[in-house]
Amino acid sequence: MMIHLHKNDLPGNISLGPSVAVDTETMGLHPGRDRLCLVQLYGGAGDAHLVQFEPGRYDAPRLKALLTDLQVTKLFHFARFDLAAIMAYLGIMPGPVYCTKIASKLSRTFTDRHGLKDLTRDLLGVEISKQQQNSDWGAADLTPEQKDYAASDVLHLHALKEKLDALLAREGRLELAEACFNFLPVRAALDLAGWAETDIFEH
Ligand code: MN
Image 1: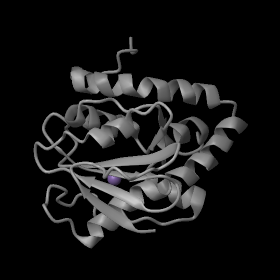
Image 2: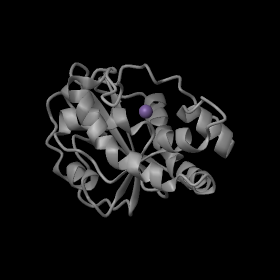
Image 3: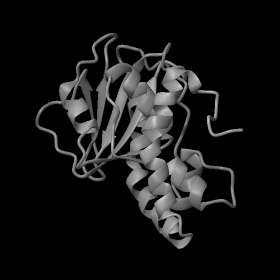
Image 4: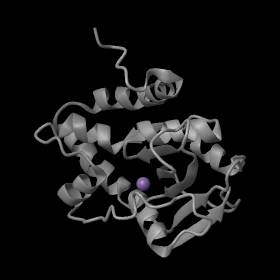
């Protein structure tokens, strides 16, 4: 597996298949304040692709076409955040969406540990490092450690989906999960529209 870094958009000759793992790195946790720096992509085999954005350069027509391609399922871990960041900067809402964190919460009710690091360790026996999580993703030149970390966040999502789908099926929650995935773009839009801290279904 190699890691390819692209500036501002994907090149034209890339095909990642019907199921693409996606993650983002940003300047922080507030989409209205903290710009989108990187989008990571992995098709489940072959190489990982990182698209790095210079400030204000969010045209990216090829990346946007992939993220909105209805024939391509986008796999995220905690899609809610990535969808909001992508909507805020690229101006499109990705779909269809699968989220390993929601799948874990719906199927692994015996634990409250649903972080990506927890899932890769518990379901795949793989230890991933979160050391670079809080590094400066706005840097013009990313370090090799940052690139490795960024790629590691998308490399295991296909394997996790397979494990989690089996658990969802076993517990009879595939349909509920699908309904939650379909709602995620709405949840992200609510976050951006000012309801980030509010559960509108609450009394
Ligand atoms: Mn990440």
